[in-house]
Length: 251
Image 1 (cartoon, rainbow, N blue to C red):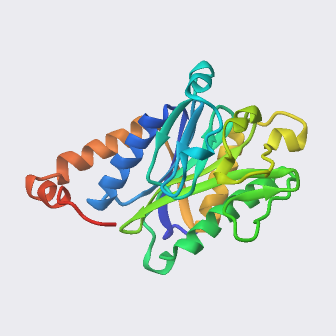
Image 2: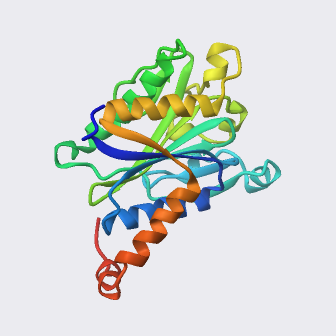
């Protein structure tokens, strides 16, 4: 990757509540609209959480509220595409917060590049990942291994992918994953019959993301990212700018 490539921060957060991760996504994307130049790839795990996308239906939630409470599963309606999915420990979640450049502004191409990133990542572990016709995500012979759902506003991306690494697959019994019935779900650990480090897979995925999207990946801590966001606010967030950004807009 050349030094002229667009910089992209890789920020590994560990396990983060869904609401806190969504808040960070919103703050980074808001900053990018105001001139924060680097792209950001957040890598993390969530505690057990079910999310429903814009095109989803709660009918695809198969468990009553009491069961969710007993298993400690939170749920959220979100503005990503796609239907219902599960997030939980042992799953690598990636949220690319990227301003797509003029030559990249094709949503279909963006989704295929996310899939390619994960297919290449799986390949490092000897797992054959592939696309399924007319379906989004990444599959293996035993079943679907990665789900995706994104949101774009002014060509800035939010949400992203969820790759099952050592995920407890029994949680997927609570939903029709991605609104699909009769489709198996699997994980890297299940395919390999051994445990895999989520952090290690995250490092591999970040490198492949850089290669596929032609980004220069730079590791940053969460505190470093917060400091840069604060610096941008203090130097650029004038009253005039805020009034323009607060005006309602369609997407």
